[in-house]
Amino acid sequence: MEQVHTDLNLQDENAKLLILLSLSNAIATTRNKSDLFDVIDQKLKKLFHFQDFVICLINEDQQTHSPFLYNQREDFVKNEGIAPAASKSYSLDDGLCEVMMAATAPVVFQVEEVLSWPSPPAWLGFWHKQGIREMIGLSISDGERCAGFFYLYAKESNAVSNQYYHLLQSIALQISVAVSNIKANEKIEEQLQQINLYKQQLEEEKSYLKDQVEKNYNHTEIIGQSQEIKKVFHLIEQVASADSTVLILGETGTGKELIARAIHSNSPRKDKLMIKLNCAALPPNLVESELFGHEKGSFTGALERRIGKFELAHNGTLFLDEIGELSPELQVKLLRAIQEKEIERVGGKGVIKTNVRILAATNRNLASEVENGKFRSDLFYRLNVFPITVPALRERKEDIILLAHHFIARFAKKTGREIKTLSKGITSTLINYPWPGNIRELEHLIERSVLLNNGNVIKEVHLPKIGQIAQTEASRAAKVKTIFENERDHILSILKLCKGKISGIGGAAKVLDIPATTLNSKIKKFKIKKEHIVS
Image 1: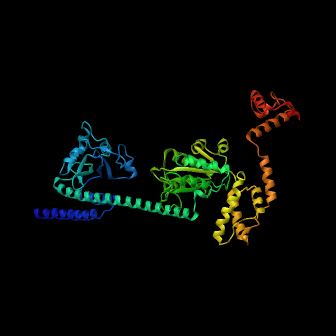
Image 2 (image 1 turned 60 degrees about the vertical axis):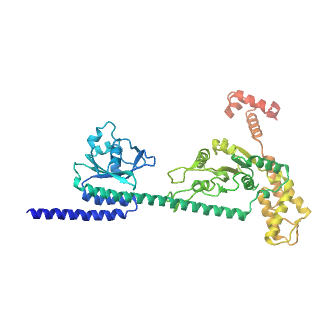
Image 3 (image 1 turned 90 degrees about the vertical axis):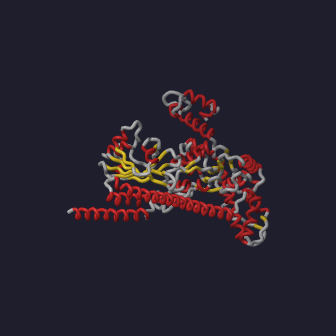
């Protein structure tokens, strides 16, 4: 009988050695946390009777430690107490860690006994509520010193016989190597992601640089000698060297982007990119992604991580054209990005610091948009630090012929034609045309005229119904009234409707829904007299 009992023990030992060998091979091949967790959870539990485990690593500050590998099931984490979480840090000065750092062999702790210490670890109460009675601690080494701890939690005492401590010590050494490999792999993965991000950014920058070279933007292309454009040149010189936000105002086609590029090319940021985003050219749901970037899978179609215009313009300039088209939701996010100098990618979890100079442009009257509740006042004041209004072409008629000759030279060279100038009759026609499309319209008109011209002098331009458009524009200009004029006319019409009565039932003040005293003040302000009402 004694021989049979010995054979059974030998068979049991052989089985455990086979499991240990299998465990060692499995640990050696792990490359990530998930694999290592499965190996310990599924294989190590076959050797020893424990319910759960945690691997903690000492942080870089050498003063605290944090959970590295642990059970993350939802039902487990929701249990009462301080559950393991990689985001949390705990002091090494808790008595328990000090024992572990000095140990050269597995250490067994009775949970209730440790809880009776003067300052027991705060997280130990979580395990006690799970019914854990015994905790076996093993030191994790990085080759030179203690790098962390491997805790096994058991609901019964003597879960591991001391005759197997040497096996546990061996396993702890193998786990130490596996943890080092996982951390190295995570570092490599992080570096690869960073490299891919830089690669993507370089490709984007290359694309923008190529685009800029092809368009040949240069501040010297702002052609003009009129007093109006000279005022703009002066403002550019004043603000370019500063880092202030600039709001460029003007009608469509006046060359607001050229003004932005002139500011950038004369600024300390000129060696970096000026990134442009036309806020009206994209659907509202895509503008946010273009501005701030997005993470892979953050929305349908986001097949890869994309960096936004803010990140591309880091240390450079971001030109936001048609800023008045931004939705109220994006206005809030843009304001935060400008104020806090940080952004969040769509679907991202962390903030990204940015150093960007903002230049914005619009053909809208943003002050009126603010009054009408269509544009945020706080964003308007943030953008309107240094406004520059670009004059319409009809306001700088002295520059029309200069610009026309500039475009003739460009398109003649482009098409290989020998065209030098304009005829005198055409010169007069161009000066008298109202140019509702401004410089852009002039540019397209000259391009068409160059293509249709047969000689070396342009004798004909194909203006769209010159007389009719000029008359229409003139009549529109005549009809445009100031806010002062509109308010005076409105009050006057109501006074006429009420036959001069100001207060009381049927009085103008009642109709206008303002106090009679206020109406009397406005009548004096607008110099409205009795003869104006009865006329």
